[in-house]
Image 1 (cartoon, rainbow, N blue to C red):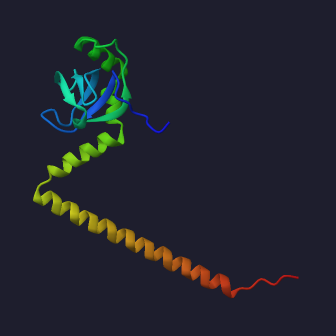
Image 2: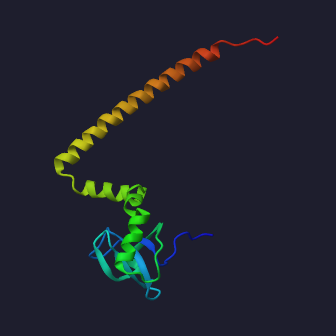
Length: 149
């Protein structure tokens, strides 16, 4: 089956555009092929209509009755521990790292650049030491020929 994530009731989605950008919501109902009714009880997103173009579907899904109230969605959200599961994903870590990079000052970027230069110099030195050692052992290994009887 090629598709793993479907637009369905209970699917958790990441908002990629609009006033609630960067928050998680749960799809409560499907209005039509372009719009859904969403609710984000733990991310402070009120129940509202959103375009599917503004959402990215995640792998998480919670179970609750069809068009459940905000209270029902909140209980299902907390029972499934969605916030902790989201923080463990690589996607969430990348979003957090991007946010940190945007908040860096000029001096922070300078310090980061210098730290990377030092790290790369250490890495290069270690590589060339290993390369030289391998070349030395290879040269001594080929000069000694083993005779077979």
